[in-house]
Length: 115
Image (tube, rainbow, N blue to C red; front, side, top):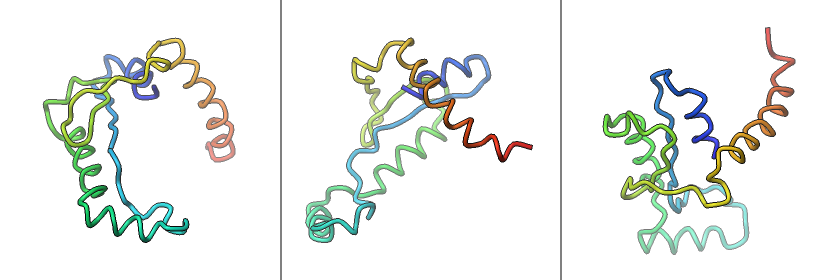
């Protein structure tokens, strides 16, 4: 939703705005949770959750000329196929409302640091 709204806001600026679903990645985030170690070892043994897959799609979206005109695009990690935002988040009005509801508190946080 943010990507699509940002894409509209930067339209004509020569900037491609994309995002990805990195898939399941066993990054160690949450490693302090019960059973996290056992789950991580099991996923590794099964070849599931390699963080490289998430990193690969990010690099591809940022560097591959194929995605230079994909503003607002949402892509799958392994295949780089376009995905759709869930239906509830597809409308421009709801995307704009989310942006604005989030921008105000973020702006308030930054305000003391502005020069």
